[in-house]
Structure formats: structure tokens, C-alpha cells
Image 1: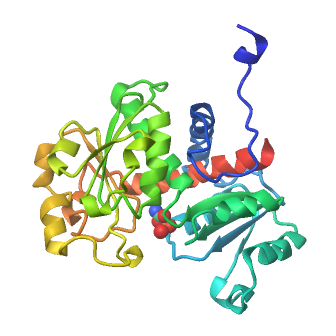
Image 2 (image 1 turned 180 degrees about the horizontal axis):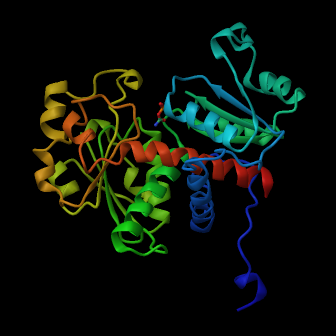
Length: 323
Ligand code: CP
């Protein structure tokens, strides 16, 4: 082996825009950096903080509603000892027509280090990253990508595989993940397909044909409209939120029809292996795409996804700023 092949990988990217851009090695670098931050968050006594971003300014800039991602980034920044600034979009000059670039020029004049942006425009994080010096993290851009969701999902799956196999080095190669629901409008589905397939998992997407992009198979996943077929060999059943707010028109005949064919509940799960984990990115439309007793049941790892999100976002910010 040459010295280059034996040396540890080094993070070189300024921004995190999407998992499509990342190599397997880069994704694994983030996942391998996160466990130390899980340990920080779990400190029973003592301070749940490390000084890795002390004195840095992290700006949360959310144009769309968010509970998990916004609070998770804020908490991640605080646990890294950074200063945080949450933009109040409703009360900002974007309401008077100020462009994203002009607003960010002004934020950067106050010396921001990291800007976390969620926007309904696919490509918004990318165009900011090209022109500005701050590290840009995409917290969801339209139906394009939600990379930190994909990373925290991969981390959660890998954690369970490692526990099931009692092997701290186990990977998710060969794990089968069934993603169910509104694939068309889902940035979570896209980031998961890119991320999980790069990590060696097999991904099958399933939903009504009206909620399935024509060319989705090009991303390297299997496609079916049959729920039983999708979940029959699944190690993970991943329910997506039906994004009623993004649908220009009703794309399935009725909620009752969707529930009958695609809801993840104890009845449909009879066709999945007993060991299959249940995941959902949140927020859940309870008893629409996911039955309440399954969401809150023993196979659900939905709140673990949320806990892991803080550590994964700490890892992302640490790598972007300190490498
Ligand atoms: N999973 C997710 O992005 O949730 P929020 O919309 O609450 O951030």
C-alpha cells in the first residue's frame, strides 16, 4: 500500500448540499465522527458540551416550518459551544423583497461561520454555497435533498445492525430498506436513496404510481407499487409523510384508499419480517401513513432517529469547520 492508501481520510468539503455529491468514504467519515457526540449528549453528570466550535457563529435560516431539524441544529451548535442565531424569516427583510444573496451578504458582514438553510426552492443551498464564504448546510431544499436526515437515518440503521450482530465494525452492506409513500415530493427519500445505496444497502421505493417519479430507478433503487412486495424481505420499513401541503392537486383517489393500500400498520406488517425496524422522518400524520400503535410500538426507532440527529449534525458542523 502507498502512504496515501494507508493514511486516514481527510474532510475537504466546505459545504453539505446533498448526499448525491458525497462518496461512501465521506459519508462513513461523518457516521464515524458521530459516536463521540452521542456520548457527549448522553453524559449523565457533567456538562453536555465540548468546545470544538467555541466562538463560532451558527445561523439557522428556515423559510419552511420545522421542529426536529431546526431544534436539532440549534442544540448541536450549543453542544459544540458555538453561538447561535435563529433568523426570524417572518420578521426579516426577505418579506420586503431582499434576495437570499443580499441577506447572506449582510449576515456574513456580521461574521457567520455556518449557515443552515431550509427553503422550498430546490437548489437554494447550492447557489448560496457557490457565492458565499460561510459553510452552507442544506436543511431541506424543496423536493431535492435533506442530507442530514439521510445521514441520521443511515447512522440509526447502522447502529441497530451493529447491535444485532454484536459487531462494532458492521456496515449496512446488504441491508434491505423499503421506503413507502409519497416518493415524488420527498427530499428525505432522495437523500436516503443516495446515502443508503452508497453504503451498500438495497433500497426499494413503494407508493402509488401518481406519487412515484418516472425516473427514480436511475438512482439505483427498485420500484414497486405493491406494499407486500416492498416489505416482504425488508430489514427496515421507512414510512414517509404524505406531504399534503406540497401537492398541487390530489394525487391519490382518497385518504381511505391510501390507507387501505399503503398504511404501515399491524395488518400490513404481517407481511414484513418480525425483526424489521420501523422508521419515519417526522412529523407523522398519525393513522394516515403510519398507525399510532406501530409508531409508538417496540419496533419503532423514530425517537432514536431524533436523538441521533443531534450527534450527526454535531459531526457535520465539526468536520466542515475544523477540517
Ligand atoms: N424530519 C424533519 O425534517 O422534520 P422537521 O420538518 O420537523 O424538521
